[in-house]
Amino acid sequence: MAFLEIKDLCVSVENKSILNGFSLTINTGEVHVIMGPNGSGKSTLANVLAGHPAYQVTQGSIYFKGKDLLQMSPDERANNGVFLAFQHPTELPGVSTALFLKTALNAKRKYLGEKPIDAVQYMKRLKTRSQALNVTDEMLKRPVNVGFSGGEKKKTETFQMAFLEPDFCILDEMDSGLDVDALKVVSDGINVLREPHRSFLMITHFQRLLTYIEPDYIHIMVNGKIVKSGDKTLAAYVEDKGYEEFK
Amino acid sequence: MKNLNNICLIKKNGHFETVPYPRNETVINVSGSDSFDCICLHFSGDLNLKINLLDKKASCKVHCVYLAARNEQLNLTIDVTHAAPDTHSEQLIRGLATDSSVVSFNGVIRMPYNSQKCIGNQNHRAILLSEKARVQAIPELEIFADDVQCSHGSAIGPLDKNQIFYMQSRGIDKKTAYHLLLNAFIADLIPEEYQVLTTDWMNTYL
Ligand SMILES: Nc1ncnc2c1ncn2[C@@H]1O[C@H](COP(=O)(O)OP(=O)(O)OP(=O)(O)O)[C@@H](O)[C@H]1O
Ligand SMILES: [Mg+2]
Image 1: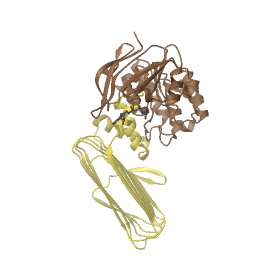
Image 2: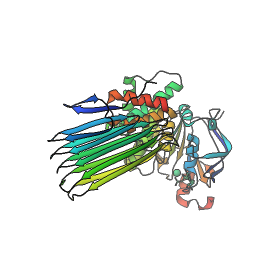
Image 3: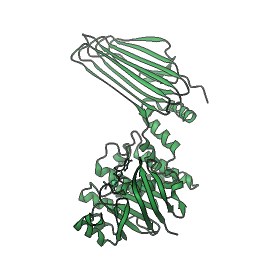
């Protein structure tokens, strides 16, 4: 059984078709990268995996650890181990990051039939994971994403992921808009999560990220489907030649 | 479900105390350098406060949270007159409206010719939780003095679906997501010991 199996996926939004027969299989422990021109449907794919209600799946299937993902609500998917670090994370006015993550963690524990986390353990986990990603205590107290700079949003998305320890990490342009030091911090934050039971789908425009995080496969996505797959050398090729020949 | 009665709290000697809910039109005169600070938690019927700031340095802070459900009709009027120079007023209103409730908020700030150096702020925000709920805000500013600061703002709309989705994407179910967001929206206006009432309301009507 594959970890994730996407077959012939067609997706439209507001009657405009965006994904046109997208297929991809990811096995446990693998790191896959998707690159592709602006508007090719990368974020749409990520959002569909997370269950965003604006996107209509018109054809195809997604199986995650043997379960039909398309039948699950977004929160069920999350509690089954799917996590999307968003390209443009949403602001939650008035809801502190600390409270948000505690609620999220306990939701998952409840889903799995476990007791809520005790306060000491929670603080410990929060501290370890936030310090690793340079997320300050002050940021944890602030409402989720409100007033965060572009780079801070990427760091806190990655921090949320590290804190919740999902099995399937989807990262939509976590490297965009980061300074060199921040890129290193975020990459390290992702690398510590690399474990045999966890898989990654990373969307990026830059080969630079892949010097920090070594991928198993790279896929080129154009017009809503994969047009070429290869190993990490494909990224260098694209950076050099562009997407023209794949269009 | 307990009957949710309107609650009015007024600050006395640094503490908020409950007072009988103001019925009909209620006139409050603030003199000297006093401050009239009140918090209203409003579930049904009308509220009509007329506040006169009579002397220099007099001020008022009116915070109101309304929660409208079923076919309740809420009419809220807060009418502040800056009758002396250098007086300050603040009106902060947050509301939730669901089912087929209808809410009207009328916030008035009057600054006559002699009200130099006055500051008046009014802010109203409401979240519509059903298709049928209606909220309208009618701000009225009567400003005749030139050296004053006066601001007002109102925003009425449904809860942002993206916020709900974002929370769900972290494993939080829809109902909990609503509660968290709506609590965050009104909580800073209500003392903690009264938040059980708003939670009650949400449990009943959401
Ligand atoms: N919610 C939406 N409503 C309307 N159109 C949408 C929506 N989401 C995506 N689209 C459209 O679908 C197309 C694909 O968008 P998507 O965000 O998936 O591209 P992308 O590959 O992630 O691009 P980028 O590299 O710029 O992030 C675009 O034309 C976009 O305008
Ligand atoms: Mg994108």
